[in-house]
Length: 321
Image (cartoon, rainbow, N blue to C red; front, side, top):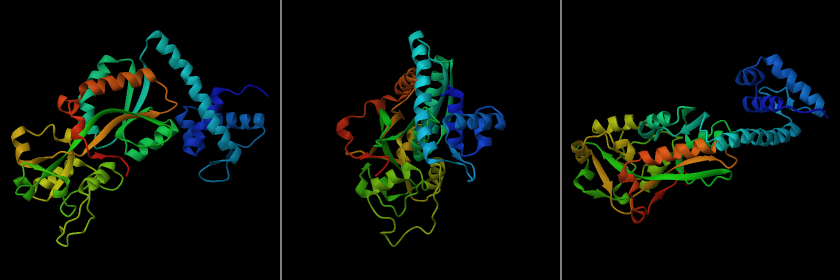
């Protein structure tokens, strides 16, 4: 058997990912004929057909799928050699793609991005706002290097490294009955006048879990139903005298103290919290960048979150139930 090149292996991995020869070629920065020729050459060398080209989108054959899975291992190990050399030289450099969930992105990114890019100018950081399931999928496919999301996930092959615990707060409309309380509990809440994020956002499920009730229990439901993909939109609805919503602590940082007293109520212990972590594949690369990223995020977290006591964290809200 003649030698198989890493380039050929990267081409079949790209076709497996995009299920399209044209898109795969574009992602590899080569022409489609070049990519197709190299894959055909590999198939002839191996004496197997890797892809069923009669199907749209293209699908790996049974043996092709097995070879692709092994190819991913080979490519990861090849990249690990480069990572070992960089580590030996003390270099923290290269391209790094980070996924982050929408309920963290606008509040957490401003805390550490400037410091990270200043301290590590040789790292090209690419940040993508993705929902939890998208991050999990892309970690498995090795199309992102790490994700910042809510854990625990309990998913084989993904490592979770907790950074901080974030409390939930109730954001209330003017004259809302819960404003009469200094602190609230989950038993005070109802799904009948709460505004929720739409399906696909893990924070939606977490909010429902805190409420511990079934939507529609109360016959006097609001006659306006709206679900958004943005916490800021929900806050504005609440400001217009519509019910209440739950917010993660970081989403309230920009609200003046006087306004917080009028709109926000904290929970009694046990406080509902969510655990925020950096997650990456078990066969992860770019260890030095992940360590640097973790360090910068952890150091940027407000002391109030760092000092959240374990005894106050009885109700832990998972990303999945």
